[in-house]
Image (tube, rainbow, N blue to C red; front, side, top):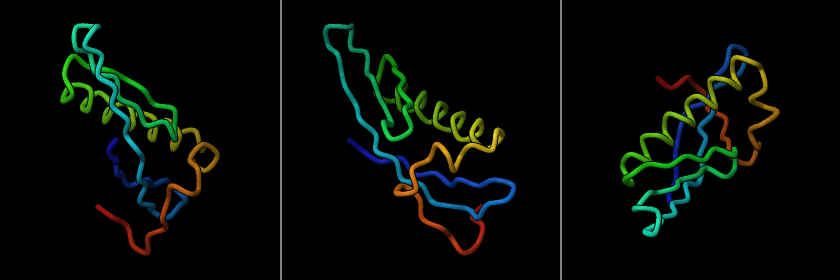
Amino acid sequence: MGTFETKATGVSMKPRKVTLHVIYQENPEDDGWVIVACPEIGVYTQGKTRMEAEMNLHEAVELWFECCIETGTLDEFLPKSLTEAQSSPAF
C-alpha cells in the first residue's frame, strides 16, 4: 500500500491537499498484471507492470477529479476526512 497526493481545486473552493491510499495487487497467474486502486474514491485500474499501473492510476485519478470539479460534485464524493484546507493556492 502507498499514498497518492494531489491538489484539489475548483472555481469556488479553496485548494485542498488530498492524500489517497494506493493498494497494489500483483497477479502472477494473470501474466504478471498489476491491479492498483484508490479505494476511497472507487478508482481501480491495471497495467502489465507496476510502473504502467501507477501511470494508469495517476491518469484515472486526475480524470476523476476533473469530472467532479466540472460537475460540481467534488464535495459530495470526496470524503472530508481525506482533505486538508490550505491557506494559499498551490501551483
